[in-house]
Image (tube, rainbow, N blue to C red; front, side, top):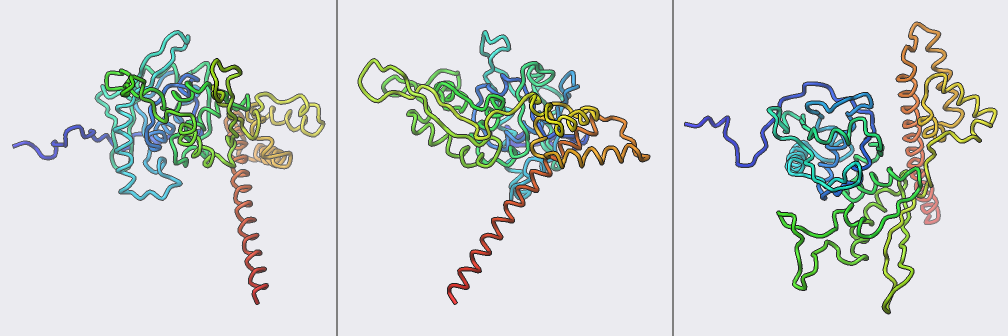
Length: 380
């Protein structure tokens, strides 16, 4: 008689081991440019969150992918109202998606396109879920795109993990890659491919044709395409670093009569381009120049200074510098300035952002309360 403990439904995923290491996150996804702009199939937001949490564990000093990556289910559902039972169902569905998922990559030399599966299911160590722990094995062929990537883009997980739309997540990733330029301009056909709205294909990869022998395409006209792929990102990214405005670009000449056709989309970041280098004006200013010099002495990187100085401002920077100096005079000496001070700098900036966000919420609530009091007084 077969052992019922070993029986399982056809196609059901094998369960994996419990947690074997404690995941550490840096709060940022860093990947090769070609991963960001791969032709990806639309999947659930839970599948996207799992992949983001996995890539977040890859460090700049890693020379190869880990044999496997693990993460708590709580890191995927935090910030949502998903209960435990529902979470299991969502994660199970996401793992089914990811084990079947392949992306169409452009080769690093840009001379060819090819397919890569995301996960590796050929090893004895298995992709799966057990006791709240997800285990993921990345396809080792992805290593050149995720480890020591020469041409990479990166985006913060702050704000990304709570997005509810796959389209919003794709906008977030792509706009982050163009943050230094301040806008993303893309031909309509390329946009369709990035948003998984290109030609529909069968299981053999052959393009499906309609009754008129034309390729079947999701959201075939431009209005439908924009309504269904851009509205959610517009709403979800409002108020973030990746809030954008949209501008259509029309053909300059048209061989036949009729309205000019939209040939490109332009998405402009409302915040404008992100600085990559410390501006000369910052160094020329007596106050900010001296603060930057001191931050560099404490091994705070120029990239972190550029990114977070506008948030912390002079007061926040000086407060941190005083704290580090006091700590160094005590018996808790800072041995690794590069690691400690950069982590403290980023942490303080993120806390300042949270405080500012909460202050806006509180101010809005107080204004609403004051308005209610006035209305009640007028009705007396």
